[in-house]
Image (cartoon, rainbow, N blue to C red):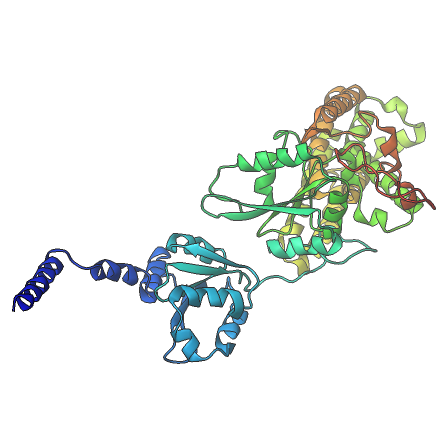
Amino acid sequence: MKRGVLKLLLKAGKRIRRSSHPTSEPSVAPRAQETGLDRRFEQISTALGASSDLVLKEIRLGGAAGPRVGAAYLDGLSDTRQLFQSLHGNDRPLEEWLNASPEAVLEELRRTVLAVGDIKVIDGIENAVPAVLAGETALFADGCAQALTLGTSGGEKRGVEEPNTQSVIRGPREGFTELLRTNTALVRRKIRDARLRIDGRQIGRVTKTDVAVMYLKGFASEAVVAEVHDRLDRIDTDAILESGYIEEFIQDHAFSPFPTIYNTERPDTVAAGLLEGRVAIFVNGTPFVLLVPALFTQYFQAPEDYYQRADFSSLLRILRLTSFFVALLAPSLYIAVTTFHQELLPTPLLIGLAGQREGVPFPAFIEALMMEITFEILREAGVRMPKAIGQSVSIVGTLVIGQAAVEAGLVSPAMVIVVSITAISNFVVPAFNMAISLRILRFLFMGVAASFGLFGVVVGLIGLVLHLCSLKSFGVSYMAPYAPLIRADQKDSLLRLPVWALRTRPRSIPNSNPVRQAPKGGNPS
């Protein structure tokens, strides 16, 4: 009897304790609710403002009664075909899925089911949103606190095509696209070496643009690589929409007309630069890749120089440098000679020029200025017009306006010839940004020629040389190997020796591996 009373008292005490101290079930319920699939979908939809391109898809594993998993991705940024083929094509029986916990379901998907290459485990919805915005897919399991992000970035993109700005007669026909991983893969196909390093980061508080720094470890100078990373880390801005933004942030001389960072659309050019010890900067969303350090002589070298014979390549380099001086000085020399130094001209030529200019009401400087400005307008119009008519309009417009100006007596025929040769020579320079620098400096030299004659042109040239010698690109002298003079690098500057003679890498570019190849007919040193 006493034992029965004691049992009743113990049971009553347990009921009192349960009523006064709630069990752990109510505290588990909110956690299960937070990690439920419906709640996850609601959170990610709220974070993205219920955007119309957000796709939230639920999938049952093993059949209609299996556990629930959900995928969240942005339509147009993600290629999810492989993902859904893996999920719908798995042949695991329903019993195995039902007996597994949510955490085990997610782990099994990551290890054996999903056929996607890049899979990461994340915690919390705050880590899933940036991944979805980057084109990845967030995969949730019902009741699991963790999630998976899958590298499904894809969608519509431009194919690999020949670059329009740096075309060649002989050489590869492939150019960079707007997709970062496609561009890095194009370079990896050319340099199949484990020492090729790619360091990624995101720049831009709003755009969060992916930027990659590529270099060859053991080839590139560690100091240059560290300087590149340091300058990129100091960028604090809302948006990076093109590599030109990066170029302006990290260049050495912001107010110099000459570019100190080289840009290219060609994977072979980037590969060659990396093998010389340079560092490449890739920016997602643009086909233009930056190469540093940059040298003045680099802007007069084309990729095709190394695909042709050495003698032919050397001739073309001399022609390009000659065209550089023609595009820079031709109008100013004409103005200086015809205005101040007529005695330098042969008498028959002087009489002919005087006869041509007899009916022209403007001095030579105004005459050249009008023609140069007119040609710049026509060139810019040709670039902005539709391609089908742009080239025709620019050519016809130049011919018609030039002929009409001569017949109207506004300019002399000699001036039309000088301006035409100047414009054609400008197009010979392989690098577009260096050609723009010439267009700017040409007007300055025309002004000093009209004011001081040949004396002004010579003083302007001296100032230009001093300015060039003062420039640096990531600690490297811009005019190397001419100033300072590096004799070993003359084999591949103005002239190019045969490939078998280019045994060492350029000393102008800091590098950790100076030997490129063995001597001709010998063994590697």
